[in-house]
Length: 97
Picture 1 (cartoon, helix red, strand yellow):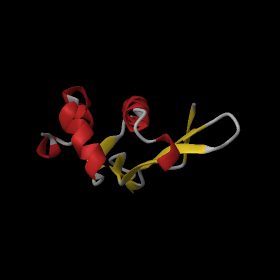
Picture 2 (picture 1 turned 60 degrees about the vertical axis):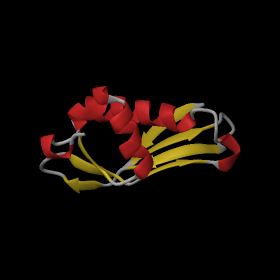
Picture 3 (picture 1 turned 30 degrees about the horizontal axis):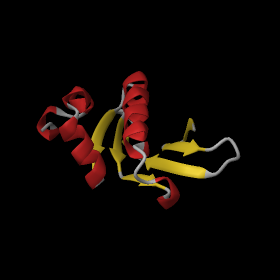
Picture 4 (picture 1 turned 90 degrees about the vertical axis):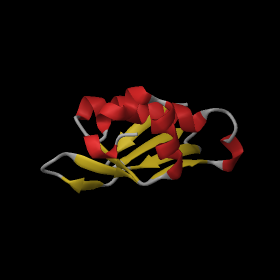
């Protein structure tokens, strides 16, 4: 599995280009470097293999390096941030769980 970042997307693919999964995070405030994590998607053929968790970990690492502040809209992302308190620093204090 290869994970790449494009403008406002983190994409996981097979070496042949088959889409495994994707996270969409559009920028909502460039001055504050703030994004909204809108969607975590895993191709139905790859579900049940922990792909969404790997995508979230890759997103958190990317957001850390890019200095992003994150607003959560996706239910899976909200659950993941609740489950992993080490992700909380990417949220505004009023958005933390």
